[in-house]
Length: 313
Ligand code: UDP
Ligand code: MG
Image (cartoon, rainbow, N blue to C red; front, side, top):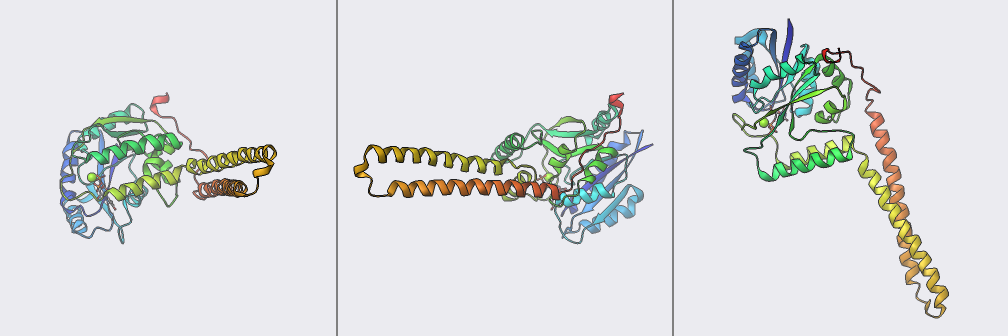
């Protein structure tokens, strides 16, 4: 029998630990073809999360596993630790706060049985979310898809079920600065998207504030985009181009009206323009090299092999 392992990053989620377990248990009561278990990753919580996990494991035994961090390392680290410590044939990433409704797990299973490697949940409504947050989120997806090789789906959450093959591929990317959404898109494979309605978190507060999200978005750009650096090169080149035109104009003026060519003002503007442009261009070139060094340092695999799935046959 195939095993489905549910990885749950938790940071100060004391009131959610048990309700999530109950909810998942209820869903799997209706699924007989797969065994299941939960792997909680306690991301250095400062409330009673760990105690709650111990108690849950005490009473539920094998169905519940957990690992615990020495301090708060962030959700990305928790996701990595969870995937690394998982062994299920299929792995589900799920938030602790029940914002990722376990009720759609059966649909995800169906998707995997159809032959998809990954089945993700896509949020179609953003009820209960500040308007400005949704607007920024839309902007983020728009630009990041435009500027990087990633293709992120609007509203695509990291609530997904993945096959072992895909999980192992994700673990091949050992970069420290992790941007999971990007990584999951980078490795390839076929994803089926299941729409779901946004739900409010069960208890507690979101760990994200606005600046946290801006930082997250920026780290997404920096991890995947070299486009901004290329833009710098173009910007510098354009300035040099105008400097050259300006130089031609100055020479023309000097020949045409030799009598009022005394101030040297034009020459100074020209020099500033020209050298400014050259410097900016060179900075862009250096930036491009740094971007490449950065990408090389990540030691990403050169390719990822896909072993035939049902769907290809
Ligand atoms: N989380 C975590 N480490 C952190 C912050 C969050 O493991 O440093 C977990 C958190 O416990 C939850 C999930 O990541 O299970 C999503 O966090 P949250 O609900 O705060 O984010 P939102 O749903 O508002 O995007
Ligand atoms: Mg949440």
